[in-house]
Amino acid sequence: MAEETMIKMIIQRQDEPEAQPYEEEFDIPYRDNMNVISALMEIRRNPVNAKGEETTPVYWDMGCLEEVCGACSMVINGKAMQSCTALIDQLEQPVRLEPMRTFPVMRDLAVDRTQMFDSLKQVKAWVPIDGTYDLGEGQRMPESKRQWAYELSKCMTCGVCLEACPNVNDNSDFIGPAALSQVRLFNTHPTGEYHKAERMEAVLDEGGLQACGNAQNCVEACPKGIPLTTSIAALNREATLHSFKSFFGSDHHV
Amino acid sequence: MADNKEFFNRRLHSFLGVFPIGLFLMQHLVVNHFATYSPEAFNNAAHFMENLPLRILLEFALIYIPLLFHAVYGIYIAFTAKSNLKRYGYFRNWMFMLQRVTGVLTLIFVVWHVWETRLAYAIYGTEINFDLMADILSSPFMFWFYIIGVISAVFHFANGLWSFCVTWGLTVTPKSQKFVTYVTLGVFVIFTYMGIASLISFAF
Ligand code: HEM
Ligand code: SF4
Ligand code: FES
Image (cartoon, rainbow over all chains, first blue to last red; front, side, top):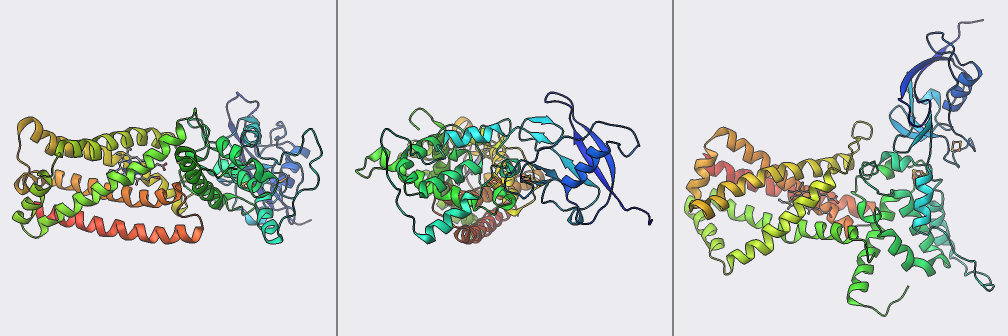
C-alpha cells in the first residue's frame, strides 16, 4: 500500500462552557472529496492527537449535512462557514478550526445560538394566522415578488453573519443582520405585511437596526448570498419614513 | 420605540455629523484656503466669519453643542466595536474601522486646536490671524500634527457622508452605495487638498 497522505488540523478545544480553551493538533488520513466533518468523524473514530496521545473526541454540531440547517457552522481558517460544505481540497493546511466565539461555546466547536432565535422572536419574524376565527385563504403573491422573497427566506440562522460583524460582541447588544433581514422577508408577505408597523417598533428597540455600523462583512460572509446590507438599508429608509410619520402624524396606517 | 432612546440618539448622531458639523468643516476649510492667495485674503475671510451677527450663539448652536454630543456618543460607539480586520479584511470593514480611528484622532486634534486658537482668544485675547497660524505651524511637530489632524477630520467626514446615506436609507442598493463611495472619495481628495495647501501656505 502506498504511503498515506495525511492532513494536519489544529483545533481549538474547550471542555465545557466556562473552561479555558486550548489547542490540539491532529493528523488525519486523507480521503478523496473529504470535508471538514468527515475529518472530524475520523477523529471521533480514532481519538488520537498528533503526538500519538489518546484524547477525547472533538465535539461539534451538525444536522442536515447539506448546508441548510446551519448547525455545523464554525470558524475555519479564520472565516466562519459551514463545516459540512467546507472541502479539505479547497482549504489551506494546516486546517484551523475554532468555534464561533461570538456565541457562548458549549464544548469544543459547538456553540449556543439561542440569542439568534430570541432576536427572531423580538422582531416577530413570523406570519401570524392564529386567531378566534378562520381567516380563510391568504392573498396570492406575484411570482416576481415570490422569487425575490425566496432569496431572503434561505436564511438558516447559522450565525456566520453575526460572527463576521464587528458590532456583534460582548460590549453591544446588537441583534445582528440575520433577524433584520427576516423582518424584510415577513414584511413582504401579503399577510405578514399586516404586522409591519409592529415589527418596525420591535426593530428600533435596544440593539436593533440602529446598532448597525455598516462594516458590511455580513453580506460578504453569508453562505446563502442573502443581500443583508440591502435589507438593512431598506429598513433604514422605512425607519426614516416611520419616524417622520409618527412624529408629524399621518393618516397612513400599517 | 417610545421608551428606547438608542434609535433617536444614533439618528441624531448621524444627522449632526453632517448638519452642522460637516458643513462647518467644509466652510472652515474653504476660509482657510484663502491663505493660499495671501495673508490679507485669509485675514479678511477670517474677520468676515468673526463678525457674523450673534457669533457666540452661532458657535454654540452650530459647533460646540453638536460636536460635543457627536464626539461623546461617537467615542461610545467606537468602543463598542471589536475589530476583526485580520480575519475579514474587506474594503468596507477597513472603512468602518478607519471611521472609528479617525473619529478619535479628530477629537484629540480638535481639542488641541480649539485650545490653541479659540480658547486662547477667549482667555488671553490672542488675536486669530495668519501670523498666529504661521507661528504655530513653524514647528515641524505641530505641522505634522495638523496634517494628520486635517486628514483624519476630512476622511471621517467624507466616509461619514457615505454611511449617512445608508443610515437614512438614501442609498439602498449596492450599486448606489458604490456610486456614493466614489463621490465621497472625491470629497475626501478635494478637501484634503484644500486643507494641506492651506497648512503649507501658513507654514512656509
Ligand atoms: C470634524 C468633526 C466631525 C465630523 C465632521 C463628523 C462627521 C461624521 C459623519 C458625517 C458621520 C456619519 C454618520 C452616520 O454614520 O450616519 C460620523 C460618524 C461617526 N463619527 Fe463623526 N464627525 C466628527 C467628529 C467625530 C469625533 C470627534 C468622534 C469621536 C470619536 C466621532 C465619531 C464617530 C463615529 C464612531 C461614527 C460612526 C457612527 C456609526 O457608524 O454609526 N466623530 N461622523
Ligand atoms: S443571513 Fe446568511 S450568514 Fe446570516 S444567519 Fe442567515 S444564512 Fe447565516
Ligand atoms: S450540517 Fe446543516 S448546514 Fe452543515
